[in-house]
Length: 198
Image (tube, rainbow, N blue to C red; front, side, top):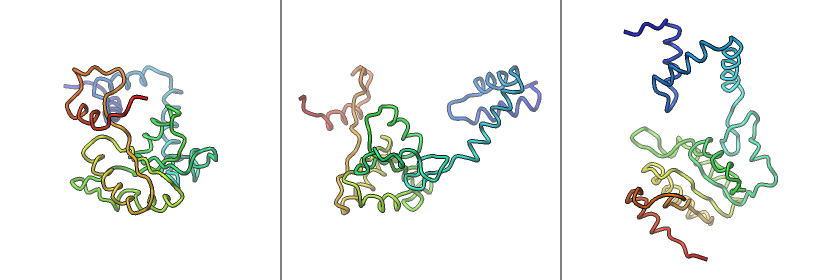
């Protein structure tokens, strides 16, 4: 029997809805809030409300922004000739941390998943097709899942007739990885995507 008061149980339940947060971690977080000042609780609740009221999707790339267009789409130093297609807005920031990609992005808003009712009409594919007229290359950076691979192939077929170079992120062995711990599919992909040493 759980003897926590209802309000504490409610907060634990809400925290445990977050991805990767189990009941024990949610409980620690809830007790942290309980033992903190009222200011922390007010700041936390205001930050969540601000996030939900201010953040919107960029009208060009479908990344996140507080304005009509995101800072990447407004950056005149970005190379608009290459569009990196990602599944979700969070994926953009994974690329941005590396500073290796200086093109622009396009967020699909998910991947094809017929079993979940997600077809091409649900994703931001039409807007991608309208953007590529000014691009030389589309880099497809979907995840290496069954749905991500299916989405990649679908996009590659669509883009084939648009006279644009279509590329895919290389797949293979992680840097610092040990061969004995790598699964067969990853090794097969690494062999297929091998490159010449220069």
